[in-house]
Image (cartoon, rainbow, N blue to C red; front, top):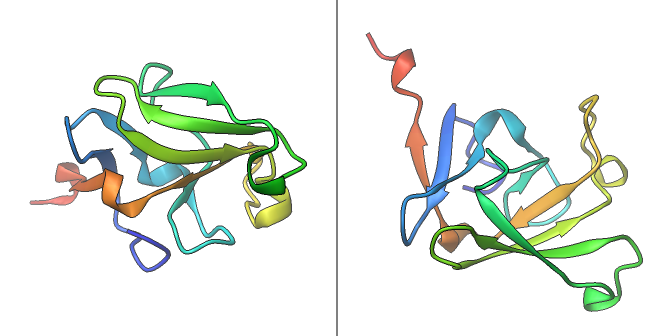
Length: 110
C-alpha cells in the first residue's frame, strides 16, 4: 500500500476493519510507508502525544485504531514540507502497511 498503490477506495484496520483513511487523502510522502493528510473520520483514529519522537522538531502524535487500539503509526505536522501540495496540507500520517487492508471503491464497477 506504499507509494505504488493509488487505486480509489478506503484503508481499513487490519484487525477490526474500522475505516481509517481514504485514498483521496493519500499523497507521496518521504518514507516507504503510505502517507495520508487526515483520517477518514474524527472517530477513526485515537491520538496520543509523542513529543520529541525520534528527534522530530515538529508536532508528533502516535496513532491507534479508535475501535481496537491497534498501533498504526505516527502523525507529523510537516505535510507541506515533505511533499504534500494539497491546499489542506499540514499533517502527514505515516502508517505501517501491516496495519492496513485496502477496500476498493465499488462505485467504479459496472
